[in-house]
Length: 390
Image (cartoon, rainbow, N blue to C red):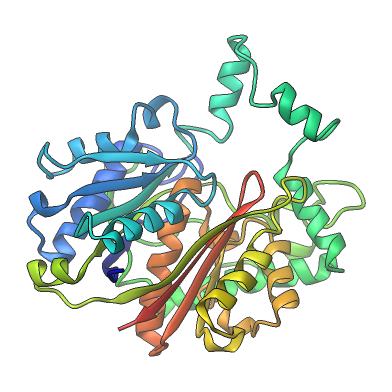
Protein backbone atom coordinates (compact mmCIF):
# COMPACT_ATOMS: atom_id res chain seq x y z
CA UNK A 1 0.00 0.00 0.00
CA UNK A 2 1.23 3.49 -0.82
CA UNK A 3 2.00 6.32 1.57
CA UNK A 4 -0.05 9.47 2.17
CA UNK A 5 1.60 12.77 2.99
CA UNK A 6 0.30 16.08 4.33
CA UNK A 7 1.91 18.88 2.35
CA UNK A 8 -0.12 21.85 3.60
CA UNK A 9 -2.46 22.57 6.49
CA UNK A 10 -4.43 25.71 7.20
CA UNK A 11 -7.33 27.07 9.22
CA UNK A 12 -9.19 30.26 9.88
CA UNK A 13 -9.15 31.80 13.32
CA UNK A 14 -12.31 30.87 15.18
CA UNK A 15 -15.22 33.29 15.36
CA UNK A 16 -17.65 33.48 18.27
CA UNK A 17 -21.37 32.95 17.68
CA UNK A 18 -22.62 36.19 16.18
CA UNK A 19 -19.05 37.47 16.21
CA UNK A 20 -16.48 38.58 13.70
CA UNK A 21 -17.23 35.98 11.04
CA UNK A 22 -21.01 36.19 11.20
CA UNK A 23 -21.20 37.78 7.75
CA UNK A 24 -19.20 35.05 6.02
CA UNK A 25 -21.24 32.56 4.05
CA UNK A 26 -19.89 29.09 4.96
CA UNK A 27 -19.42 28.16 1.30
CA UNK A 28 -17.14 31.16 0.80
CA UNK A 29 -15.34 30.41 4.06
CA UNK A 30 -14.64 26.90 2.81
CA UNK A 31 -13.48 28.28 -0.54
CA UNK A 32 -11.02 30.57 1.24
CA UNK A 33 -9.34 27.56 2.84
CA UNK A 34 -9.20 25.71 -0.49
CA UNK A 35 -7.54 28.68 -2.15
CA UNK A 36 -5.04 29.02 0.70
CA UNK A 37 -3.99 25.38 0.34
CA UNK A 38 -3.30 26.07 -3.34
CA UNK A 39 -1.27 29.13 -2.38
CA UNK A 40 0.76 27.23 0.20
CA UNK A 41 1.71 24.49 -2.25
CA UNK A 42 1.75 26.38 -5.53
CA UNK A 43 -0.39 23.56 -6.92
CA UNK A 44 -2.12 23.80 -10.26
CA UNK A 45 -5.79 23.77 -9.15
CA UNK A 46 -6.64 21.33 -11.95
CA UNK A 47 -4.38 18.69 -10.38
CA UNK A 48 -6.66 18.31 -7.34
CA UNK A 49 -8.65 15.14 -7.89
CA UNK A 50 -11.23 15.51 -5.14
CA UNK A 51 -12.28 17.68 -2.22
CA UNK A 52 -13.71 15.85 0.78
CA UNK A 53 -15.26 18.28 3.25
CA UNK A 54 -16.68 17.66 6.69
CA UNK A 55 -19.81 19.50 7.78
CA UNK A 56 -22.34 18.56 10.46
CA UNK A 57 -25.36 20.79 9.83
CA UNK A 58 -25.86 20.15 6.12
CA UNK A 59 -28.92 22.37 5.82
CA UNK A 60 -29.58 25.91 4.62
CA UNK A 61 -26.36 27.60 3.55
CA UNK A 62 -24.47 24.36 4.16
CA UNK A 63 -26.83 22.15 2.16
CA UNK A 64 -26.74 20.65 -1.35
CA UNK A 65 -23.15 19.35 -1.00
CA UNK A 66 -21.21 22.17 0.67
CA UNK A 67 -17.92 20.66 -0.56
CA UNK A 68 -18.85 20.98 -4.23
CA UNK A 69 -20.23 24.46 -3.62
CA UNK A 70 -16.98 25.52 -1.94
CA UNK A 71 -15.09 24.26 -5.01
CA UNK A 72 -17.36 26.32 -7.27
CA UNK A 73 -16.76 29.40 -5.09
CA UNK A 74 -12.99 28.87 -5.17
CA UNK A 75 -10.55 29.36 -8.02
CA UNK A 76 -10.55 25.64 -8.80
CA UNK A 77 -11.86 24.56 -12.19
CA UNK A 78 -15.24 22.88 -12.56
CA UNK A 79 -13.43 19.60 -13.19
CA UNK A 80 -12.62 19.29 -9.47
CA UNK A 81 -15.39 17.34 -7.69
CA UNK A 82 -16.35 17.56 -4.04
CA UNK A 83 -18.23 15.47 -1.52
CA UNK A 84 -19.50 16.23 1.97
CA UNK A 85 -19.02 14.03 5.03
CA UNK A 86 -20.96 13.85 8.29
CA UNK A 87 -19.38 11.91 11.12
CA UNK A 88 -20.64 14.48 13.58
CA UNK A 89 -17.79 16.29 15.38
CA UNK A 90 -15.25 14.08 13.62
CA UNK A 91 -16.51 14.97 10.14
CA UNK A 92 -13.36 16.58 8.78
CA UNK A 93 -11.09 14.11 10.56
CA UNK A 94 -13.01 11.46 8.64
CA UNK A 95 -12.64 13.59 5.50
CA UNK A 96 -8.89 13.49 6.10
CA UNK A 97 -8.95 9.73 6.52
CA UNK A 98 -11.04 9.23 3.37
CA UNK A 99 -8.60 11.43 1.46
CA UNK A 100 -5.62 9.52 2.84
CA UNK A 101 -7.24 6.19 1.95
CA UNK A 102 -7.80 7.37 -1.63
CA UNK A 103 -4.15 8.32 -1.91
CA UNK A 104 -2.85 5.18 -0.17
CA UNK A 105 -4.96 2.98 -2.46
CA UNK A 106 -3.30 4.46 -5.51
CA UNK A 107 -6.57 5.63 -7.05
CA UNK A 108 -5.75 9.33 -6.50
CA UNK A 109 -2.59 11.38 -6.00
CA UNK A 110 -3.72 14.81 -4.80
CA UNK A 111 -6.78 15.25 -2.57
CA UNK A 112 -7.91 18.05 -0.27
CA UNK A 113 -9.61 17.21 3.02
CA UNK A 114 -11.37 20.12 4.67
CA UNK A 115 -14.17 21.15 6.99
CA UNK A 116 -16.48 24.09 7.51
CA UNK A 117 -19.15 25.12 9.96
CA UNK A 118 -20.84 28.46 10.53
CA UNK A 119 -22.62 27.86 13.80
CA UNK A 120 -23.88 31.43 13.69
CA UNK A 121 -25.62 31.11 10.33
CA UNK A 122 -26.51 27.41 10.56
CA UNK A 123 -27.18 26.72 14.26
CA UNK A 124 -26.47 23.35 15.84
CA UNK A 125 -29.49 21.05 15.58
CA UNK A 126 -31.15 23.10 12.84
CA UNK A 127 -31.77 20.16 10.51
CA UNK A 128 -33.57 18.20 13.22
CA UNK A 129 -35.57 21.16 14.49
CA UNK A 130 -36.72 22.16 10.99
CA UNK A 131 -37.78 18.59 10.24
CA UNK A 132 -39.72 18.40 13.51
CA UNK A 133 -41.45 21.73 12.85
CA UNK A 134 -42.48 20.50 9.41
CA UNK A 135 -43.83 17.27 10.87
CA UNK A 136 -41.19 15.00 9.36
CA UNK A 137 -40.21 13.28 12.60
CA UNK A 138 -36.69 12.54 13.82
CA UNK A 139 -33.92 9.96 13.68
CA UNK A 140 -35.14 7.93 16.69
CA UNK A 141 -36.67 5.10 14.71
CA UNK A 142 -38.67 2.25 16.26
CA UNK A 143 -35.63 0.05 15.75
CA UNK A 144 -33.34 2.36 17.73
CA UNK A 145 -35.95 2.76 20.47
CA UNK A 146 -36.26 -1.01 20.76
CA UNK A 147 -32.48 -1.26 21.22
CA UNK A 148 -32.31 1.73 23.61
CA UNK A 149 -35.71 2.01 25.32
CA UNK A 150 -36.41 5.24 27.19
CA UNK A 151 -32.98 6.61 26.26
CA UNK A 152 -32.41 10.14 25.00
CA UNK A 153 -28.95 10.41 23.47
CA UNK A 154 -27.24 13.50 24.87
CA UNK A 155 -23.64 14.67 24.59
CA UNK A 156 -24.10 16.81 27.69
CA UNK A 157 -25.25 13.83 29.75
CA UNK A 158 -22.38 11.83 28.25
CA UNK A 159 -19.97 14.45 29.56
CA UNK A 160 -21.53 14.19 33.02
CA UNK A 161 -21.33 10.40 32.89
CA UNK A 162 -17.65 10.61 31.92
CA UNK A 163 -16.91 12.74 34.98
CA UNK A 164 -18.71 10.28 37.25
CA UNK A 165 -17.16 7.16 35.71
CA UNK A 166 -13.58 8.44 35.92
CA UNK A 167 -13.90 10.03 39.34
CA UNK A 168 -13.37 13.58 38.14
CA UNK A 169 -14.23 16.59 40.25
CA UNK A 170 -15.66 19.93 39.21
CA UNK A 171 -12.45 21.57 40.43
CA UNK A 172 -10.39 19.35 38.10
CA UNK A 173 -12.57 20.28 35.14
CA UNK A 174 -12.55 23.99 35.98
CA UNK A 175 -8.77 23.96 36.39
CA UNK A 176 -8.33 22.21 33.04
CA UNK A 177 -10.62 24.78 31.40
CA UNK A 178 -8.63 27.65 32.87
CA UNK A 179 -5.40 26.07 31.62
CA UNK A 180 -6.91 25.73 28.13
CA UNK A 181 -7.33 29.51 28.03
CA UNK A 182 -3.87 30.12 29.49
CA UNK A 183 -2.25 27.86 26.92
CA UNK A 184 -4.20 29.50 24.10
CA UNK A 185 -3.21 32.96 25.36
CA UNK A 186 0.47 31.99 25.57
CA UNK A 187 0.38 30.39 22.10
CA UNK A 188 -1.29 33.43 20.56
CA UNK A 189 1.08 35.90 22.17
CA UNK A 190 4.09 33.81 21.12
CA UNK A 191 2.87 33.66 17.50
CA UNK A 192 2.46 29.87 17.63
CA UNK A 193 -0.62 30.02 15.37
CA UNK A 194 0.86 32.44 12.86
CA UNK A 195 1.87 29.82 10.31
CA UNK A 196 -1.39 27.88 10.46
CA UNK A 197 -4.01 30.65 10.32
CA UNK A 198 -5.26 32.23 7.11
CA UNK A 199 -6.58 35.68 7.88
CA UNK A 200 -10.01 36.56 6.53
CA UNK A 201 -11.32 40.03 5.82
CA UNK A 202 -14.16 41.27 7.98
CA UNK A 203 -16.17 44.49 7.94
CA UNK A 204 -17.44 46.04 11.17
CA UNK A 205 -20.68 47.95 11.71
CA UNK A 206 -18.98 51.22 10.69
CA UNK A 207 -17.75 49.72 7.43
CA UNK A 208 -14.12 49.42 8.51
CA UNK A 209 -12.27 46.44 7.04
CA UNK A 210 -9.80 44.42 9.11
CA UNK A 211 -8.20 40.98 8.97
CA UNK A 212 -9.47 38.41 11.46
CA UNK A 213 -6.52 36.25 12.49
CA UNK A 214 -6.84 35.73 16.27
CA UNK A 215 -9.19 33.14 17.72
CA UNK A 216 -12.10 35.13 19.06
CA UNK A 217 -13.08 32.68 21.79
CA UNK A 218 -9.94 33.13 23.89
CA UNK A 219 -10.70 34.92 27.14
CA UNK A 220 -7.53 36.90 27.73
CA UNK A 221 -8.89 38.02 31.10
CA UNK A 222 -9.90 34.53 32.25
CA UNK A 223 -9.40 33.73 35.92
CA UNK A 224 -9.72 30.45 37.74
CA UNK A 225 -12.06 32.06 40.25
CA UNK A 226 -14.29 33.32 37.45
CA UNK A 227 -14.44 29.91 35.79
CA UNK A 228 -15.23 28.21 39.10
CA UNK A 229 -18.07 30.67 39.63
CA UNK A 230 -19.97 29.75 36.45
CA UNK A 231 -23.30 28.08 37.18
CA UNK A 232 -23.59 24.32 36.73
CA UNK A 233 -25.65 23.23 33.74
CA UNK A 234 -27.24 20.52 35.89
CA UNK A 235 -27.79 20.73 39.63
CA UNK A 236 -25.40 18.37 41.36
CA UNK A 237 -23.41 17.89 38.16
CA UNK A 238 -19.90 18.74 37.01
CA UNK A 239 -20.16 20.66 33.74
CA UNK A 240 -20.62 24.39 33.19
CA UNK A 241 -20.54 26.55 30.08
CA UNK A 242 -16.94 27.39 31.04
CA UNK A 243 -15.88 23.73 30.92
CA UNK A 244 -17.60 23.13 27.56
CA UNK A 245 -16.41 23.86 24.02
CA UNK A 246 -17.41 27.18 22.53
CA UNK A 247 -19.84 27.56 19.64
CA UNK A 248 -17.67 28.68 16.76
CA UNK A 249 -17.53 29.66 13.09
CA UNK A 250 -14.56 28.40 11.11
CA UNK A 251 -13.02 26.41 8.29
CA UNK A 252 -9.87 24.34 7.92
CA UNK A 253 -8.16 21.99 5.52
CA UNK A 254 -5.15 19.89 4.58
CA UNK A 255 -3.76 18.74 1.26
CA UNK A 256 -2.85 15.05 1.08
CA UNK A 257 -0.73 13.57 -1.68
CA UNK A 258 1.02 10.39 -2.75
CA UNK A 259 4.69 9.94 -3.66
CA UNK A 260 3.72 10.78 -7.24
CA UNK A 261 1.88 13.85 -5.99
CA UNK A 262 4.98 15.04 -4.14
CA UNK A 263 6.94 14.91 -7.37
CA UNK A 264 4.18 16.60 -9.39
CA UNK A 265 3.94 19.47 -6.93
CA UNK A 266 7.63 19.66 -6.14
CA UNK A 267 6.95 20.21 -2.45
CA UNK A 268 8.31 18.75 0.76
CA UNK A 269 5.90 16.86 3.01
CA UNK A 270 5.03 18.17 6.46
CA UNK A 271 4.01 14.76 7.77
CA UNK A 272 3.22 11.19 6.78
CA UNK A 273 0.00 9.42 7.76
CA UNK A 274 1.26 6.67 10.08
CA UNK A 275 -2.08 5.21 11.21
CA UNK A 276 -5.77 5.87 10.74
CA UNK A 277 -8.80 4.15 12.24
CA UNK A 278 -12.32 4.72 13.48
CA UNK A 279 -14.27 2.95 16.19
CA UNK A 280 -17.85 2.76 17.42
CA UNK A 281 -18.65 2.63 21.14
CA UNK A 282 -21.48 3.10 23.65
CA UNK A 283 -23.85 5.77 22.24
CA UNK A 284 -25.27 6.54 25.69
CA UNK A 285 -22.10 7.66 27.45
CA UNK A 286 -21.23 8.67 23.87
CA UNK A 287 -18.05 10.68 24.49
CA UNK A 288 -15.88 7.86 25.86
CA UNK A 289 -14.93 6.40 22.47
CA UNK A 290 -11.56 8.24 22.12
CA UNK A 291 -10.17 6.22 25.04
CA UNK A 292 -10.61 2.66 23.71
CA UNK A 293 -10.08 3.89 20.15
CA UNK A 294 -6.70 5.34 21.07
CA UNK A 295 -5.67 2.20 22.97
CA UNK A 296 -6.56 0.10 19.92
CA UNK A 297 -4.83 2.50 17.51
CA UNK A 298 -1.60 2.48 19.49
CA UNK A 299 -1.67 -1.31 19.67
CA UNK A 300 -2.24 -1.62 15.91
CA UNK A 301 0.55 0.86 15.24
CA UNK A 302 2.89 -1.00 17.59
CA UNK A 303 3.37 2.11 19.70
CA UNK A 304 3.24 3.12 23.34
CA UNK A 305 1.61 6.16 24.90
CA UNK A 306 4.90 7.92 25.60
CA UNK A 307 6.10 7.54 22.00
CA UNK A 308 3.56 10.17 20.97
CA UNK A 309 5.11 13.62 21.27
CA UNK A 310 1.90 15.62 20.90
CA UNK A 311 -1.77 14.78 21.31
CA UNK A 312 -4.72 16.82 20.03
CA UNK A 313 -7.83 15.63 21.89
CA UNK A 314 -10.92 17.68 21.17
CA UNK A 315 -12.19 19.54 24.20
CA UNK A 316 -15.89 19.02 23.55
CA UNK A 317 -16.23 19.04 27.34
CA UNK A 318 -13.37 19.14 29.84
CA UNK A 319 -14.28 15.69 31.14
CA UNK A 320 -13.21 14.08 27.85
CA UNK A 321 -9.51 15.08 27.72
CA UNK A 322 -9.16 14.86 31.51
CA UNK A 323 -10.52 11.29 31.50
CA UNK A 324 -8.35 10.55 28.45
CA UNK A 325 -5.16 11.60 30.25
CA UNK A 326 -6.13 9.88 33.48
CA UNK A 327 -7.15 6.59 31.86
CA UNK A 328 -4.27 6.26 29.37
CA UNK A 329 -1.57 7.78 31.56
CA UNK A 330 -0.74 10.56 29.11
CA UNK A 331 1.57 13.37 30.17
CA UNK A 332 -0.69 16.47 30.38
CA UNK A 333 2.04 18.65 28.89
CA UNK A 334 1.69 16.72 25.61
CA UNK A 335 -2.10 17.18 25.33
CA UNK A 336 -3.41 20.30 23.59
CA UNK A 337 -0.33 22.36 24.48
CA UNK A 338 -1.72 25.40 22.64
CA UNK A 339 -5.15 25.15 24.23
CA UNK A 340 -8.24 23.49 22.83
CA UNK A 341 -11.90 23.96 21.97
CA UNK A 342 -12.79 25.32 25.41
CA UNK A 343 -10.70 28.39 24.58
CA UNK A 344 -10.38 28.28 20.79
CA UNK A 345 -13.86 27.09 19.83
CA UNK A 346 -15.29 23.95 18.25
CA UNK A 347 -16.61 24.64 14.75
CA UNK A 348 -18.13 21.12 14.52
CA UNK A 349 -17.42 19.87 10.99
CA UNK A 350 -14.25 21.97 10.73
CA UNK A 351 -12.67 20.77 13.97
CA UNK A 352 -11.06 17.60 12.58
CA UNK A 353 -8.76 19.25 10.06
CA UNK A 354 -8.42 22.23 12.42
CA UNK A 355 -6.87 20.00 15.07
CA UNK A 356 -4.67 18.29 12.49
CA UNK A 357 -3.48 21.68 11.28
CA UNK A 358 -2.49 22.63 14.81
CA UNK A 359 -0.92 19.22 15.36
CA UNK A 360 1.39 19.19 12.32
CA UNK A 361 2.44 22.79 12.86
CA UNK A 362 3.00 22.03 16.55
CA UNK A 363 5.21 19.04 15.77
CA UNK A 364 7.25 21.22 13.44
CA UNK A 365 7.66 23.98 16.03
CA UNK A 366 8.69 21.56 18.78
CA UNK A 367 10.75 19.18 16.68
CA UNK A 368 8.51 16.28 17.67
CA UNK A 369 8.19 13.12 15.62
CA UNK A 370 4.77 11.56 16.25
CA UNK A 371 1.40 13.21 16.83
CA UNK A 372 -1.99 11.65 17.57
CA UNK A 373 -5.37 13.25 16.99
CA UNK A 374 -8.70 11.98 18.28
CA UNK A 375 -12.11 13.35 19.12
CA UNK A 376 -15.41 12.20 20.55
CA UNK A 377 -18.33 12.13 18.14
CA UNK A 378 -22.09 12.06 18.34
CA UNK A 379 -23.45 8.53 18.33
CA UNK A 380 -20.51 7.17 20.33
CA UNK A 381 -17.66 7.08 17.80
CA UNK A 382 -14.04 8.25 17.57
CA UNK A 383 -11.48 8.63 14.81
CA UNK A 384 -7.77 8.28 15.57
CA UNK A 385 -5.08 9.56 13.24
CA UNK A 386 -1.36 9.24 13.95
CA UNK A 387 1.09 11.27 11.88
CA UNK A 388 4.88 11.31 11.65
CA UNK A 389 6.60 14.65 11.08
CA UNK A 390 9.06 14.57 8.19
